Image 1 (tube, rainbow, N blue to C red):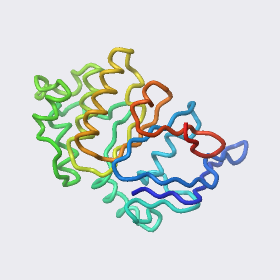
Image 2: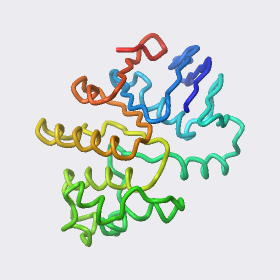
Image 3: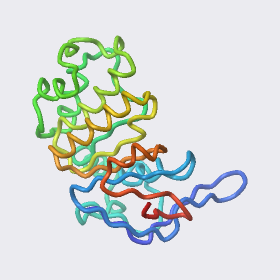
Image 4: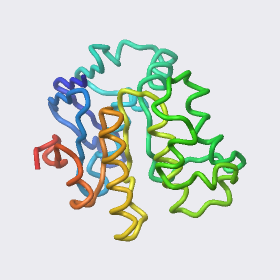
Length: 219
């Protein structure tokens, strides 16, 4: 489903070029759940940005479902991303003046997605059905995290990108979120690429890769 061939990525800085990836080759099959681990600044977020087309300057080839992302115009990439990729953001990115159910439904409306779940079903799964009419600005961080998960899984997308989905949680709630993501993945069968600095969180994935030596090394 995802094919990466001889990918090179570097950034320019005041002290010279900073290389992130060098001749990276990787295949990710449909329905796989992979985790990327590594310290801050190692290139994990850059990898997600490359997959989503938010970062478009690179050498090499990157295909999703045999579609060469480099050949898409900016508008085509935006449309492709909306119809095929969902996210769990580290900082949630909810819209404060919308209710919980409106935040969940917005992704469906904007991108014309089919549903995996009704809004009521997904909110019940993440234990937020009683908060459906609550404005996002009144939610706790723990509640906002679960809205972000509901929003990522409610629509039928082929790929889900998760950026440190348990980063701000204590041990108890981290385990709850790990179990929740694993359960929803089993139901939806989408492809998940999750980045984390936490080895315990990475264990819920089917495969784990470590950012090392400008590449992704099986861990």
